[in-house]
Length: 356
Image (tube, rainbow, N blue to C red; front, side):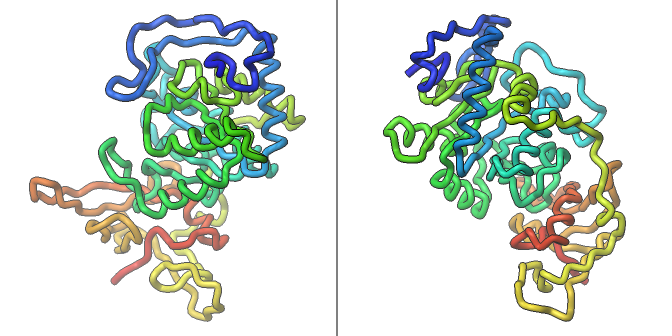
C-alpha cells in the first residue's frame, strides 16, 4: 500500500507531496494520531488525483462523506488537530457560515452523487449550505438539535444514530473522509470497513479517499490519498464533474419557517411520523414560554421556548441534573431545518412536541 497516494496511486509514478508546515507536535494527543505537519501535492499530481476522485464518485452507487473539523476551519471554527492557526472566526460559532467545501458536497447530494453524510462536527454548516436534515447523521451530537447533545469523548452515541451508522458502514461502496484525523473514534468504521472490503477486491467496492493536509493512521488503507486544501480540491472537482462552482452565501431561513406555529399533518401527537390520514393535524407552537417535551435526550426531556437566535433558530431552556445532584439550567437550540424536514415529512419523529 502507498501511504502518500493510496492503493490506486501506487503505480502512477507520482511524486510525494511537499512539506508546507513542519511540526513535532501530535495532532490529537491521547489518540491514535500522527504529527501535526502539513503537506501539499504538486500541481500536476493534484490534478491527476482530483480526476481520479471524480471518476470514483461517478462510479459509486452508495457514496458516503465522513467529515471532521478540518472542513469547518475555513468557516472560522477552530479544530483540535491543526497547529498552524485558523481563519478568524465570527463572534459566536453559531454565526459561522458554510464553506465552499460544504456547498460543493451539498451540490453533489442535490445531483444524486452523494447518498449519506456522516458528520463528526456539531456546527450545522452542511444544513446551512442547504443539505436536508434527512441526509445527515450527526453522530457525535449537534448544536442545533436539542435531542442530540454533544457527546463527550467517553460518552455513548445515540442508539438510533449508531444503528444508522452501522447500516451505512455496510451499504457504502465509497467513503470520502474529509478534514478528519480519524484518530480511532467508533465512527471511523464507515471509512475503515469500506477500505478493508476494497483490499479484498469485493465486487463493486471502491474503497476510501482521504482529503487532509495532515497524515492519518489510515493513509495506507485508502484507495486514494490527497494532501491538499479542501476548498481547492472541491473547486477542481466541480470542473471535473462539469458542475458550476457554488457560491457560499449567508444562511437565511426559508419562508415556511417565518411563523412560530407549525401545522404538521404527517405526525401524531407524540411526534411519531404516521402515514395514515389524520384530520387532526399536529400543531407545534414554538412561541416564547411554550412548554415542549424533547423526544430524545434522557431524563431532562422537558423544556421551555425562551426565544430565538439571530438566524431564527429556537432557543429551548431545560433543567439538567448534574452528577453532583444540583440542577442546572442549560439552553439548547432547535435548528430551523428540522422544521423544514418535518413539514416535508422527512423526519421519523419530531424533535419536540408541545405539552401543557
